[in-house]
Image (cartoon, rainbow, N blue to C red; front, side):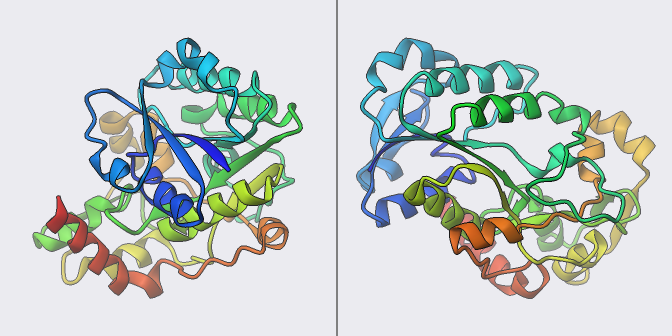
Length: 288
């Protein structure tokens, strides 16, 4: 298949794109002109210079792609506008679309388990996402993928735990640590993306593994002798703003329907894969 991917140089995209290439797909990646794309070129990826804001000007060049994989995420205040720009450009073409959302659209699930059919109650930081999910689904040729909090590789949300532990410094958690995150390993997530693309599986899909430990339990597994310090949510909001509530989220999210639909089985859960995570973390640091 001929695929157009955004976010190919990011944390998630850097795992998804090589796997797509391993499966024999032709991949074109949207990459900012100032970004080093040598690793992508070495894997046979065609580079198209630009960013999400420039997509409308590139639309005429996108009509021949079989599928679009929107992984790129902006963390700034322009995130809703940029995401919608990409969505509008991609859905104007007949190709299949994978629109990346996330489990934060459920907010806190209050000890209840939510699944692919459950109503959403998004955290304020992602309050704009449900409307865009529905716009993608309305095409009838789109998948909305909601990954859990991603771990593994060079790490993202959990990266501070590894860095602090490596330096024998305190590991900080927002809240008391008794909350749970819906989580997914980076490599399992990449496999999920590939299955969605190859099957052109439509609808709402969840990339969530079987991690059931509390956040404190997960952090203790990483800490390797470092102490764990908790930050009260009120103080965290002063420092992180609305993002503090995302770090303090308490969720139980099922991916049973997605597993059945795609034949996808996560190979890892957080606490039993910590040795592998440490090896990947150190490897990524050595390469960097």
